[in-house]
Image (cartoon, rainbow, N blue to C red):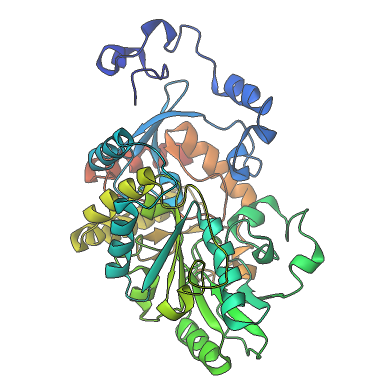
Length: 449
């Protein structure tokens, strides 16, 4: 937190260098007032739709600052955070190594419109950790990564058709919004207005965990190797291997969307965990250390179809910007095998704690674990964890709303959507996990089921 943000508890004003007259109880607006003010200048008051709490009701908490595994809203309420910027933050909010890298980079200038050593070093770091990424191109978001992958796949193969899977979410790319995961599932929409039929005419949306039979018109198959946008659904045995074989059979490209799983499941992402090598990989979130960034990596012969070597256009003034690449490199350098062992253990502990807490209150819920990812499914519609979008959609959204607000009141921040993943990081220490368990138990007490 900088010394100019006046949203902290009065007791920390001296330590933080804030202006005491602006702290809580001295005129700072409430979450409700701040949200209403935002809505007068920002459509819906938010810059990403799920943040508006439409699926859970109520007013969003407005975050003023964060540290480690905690966030504080503008009313100075402290929350244990299981959102972690939707997986972008592994080391914890405001990690000293990341913030130092950001400060150092900013001191050298924030954007040049020219190549930098930092983008080169981050590209090298990704290629070293993910062998399928023989070449890496940076951009500004996961959505830009997937949209570039669509264009590149079509340009490299000379084909038009794209294959995706129900419940997978690949960002706000027109060709990939024929169906979606958490964002669209939460809003109850099969697609979105503003995308004409012709934009998705060459997109097939097929059942997840079923290997399709492709034809020679398919340019690429896009898949979340672990479906993290429908409550966390693991790939069925043979599914990813089957996609690889089927793409090879017809000459299509296999594209892994590892915006969430990349460097979250492990140093090599989902492709290392399942030992399946894609042709292209989309990255985001984690590789920026919490700053906006995206990347597309893949085979040399495919990637060199991008301009200036090939004819598939890609450009961006802020692509590979020195601030995000510095933060990303600092974050990746902290992610050792020991870190992932810790994350695996904490994910299992979180799942078990949530399961037991719900069971104690008679709440039917499952919290499937895939590596370091924890999912949610509420209600007794399934005996086992969901394996596809149709099963995931049977979750009891009304029950989730009660759970969400119950634990929020007790000081725990869940993602405001029933189809999201839960994230733990290095800052979720044993002591904090105990506090988390106590708060969850308190928040679930008395929920009507």
